[in-house]
Amino acid sequence: MDAEERQRRIVRTARRAGSVEVAVLAEELGVAKETVRRDLRALEDHGLVRRTHGGAYPVESAGFETTLAFRTTVQVPEKRRIAAAAAGLLGDAETVFVDEGFTPQLIAEALPRDRPLTVVTASLATAGVLAGAPHTSVLLLGGRVRPGTLATVDHWTTRMLSGFVLDLAFIGANGITREHGMTTPDPAVAEVKSQAVRASRRTVFAGVHSKFGAVSFCRFAQVTEVEAIVTSSLLPASEAHRYSLLGPQVIRV
Image (cartoon, rainbow, N blue to C red; front, side, top):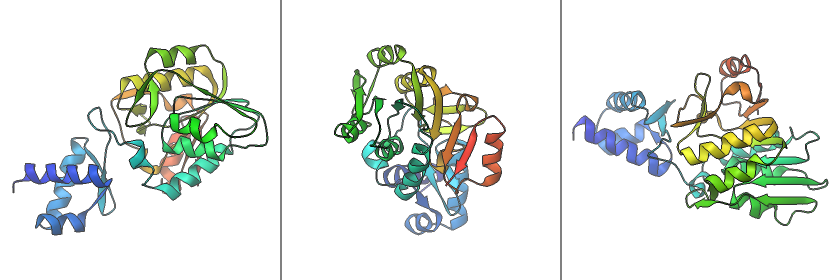
């Protein structure tokens, strides 16, 4: 097969499995490892994958976004560590926004149950996790439910958010860079996230190391707008320092 068809197969595999390895691809495609590396470099140049040591993972874009069900199966130990550290930044907040996505859902699970807390969320999954928690009042934002993420969007959602003044927002993203800030593929999702940031006195971004350097379609906030960034120690310390120079505290766990 030619390079174009080979690269299409690599992208399909990456999106289906969540990541690809050079050695495995070389064997499956019947080509040399260096050929696969060249393909991955080309795909990275086109913004379709991001290379890692020994492989690559797909970059979410306006035309491709993973589902919540898929996100619950990848990088779970890393996400749990991040979620626990992010929940530790609650401080004396009494009203909290929890974003859609699996890592924010894990943050919600890690929030204290022994004190009064009001949680606002667009995520049906997060609302379900907290619905029976003692001392926690859950406000689920109305709107159109996106089937892949089980979260609400559109003007009903943002209109409700615009009437709140929240102590803290836990925000996720599909990508974060120093130049382009925090991004997500869907404009409707971006507007909800942007409104949550505007409504909150403090904002904490939480995300796995692979989010860093990735850029999606719609920007909803700049790095300078967040108080803290929580990620894992898999993000190099030098890169974490570059983000901290823009203002937020960067916590690696």
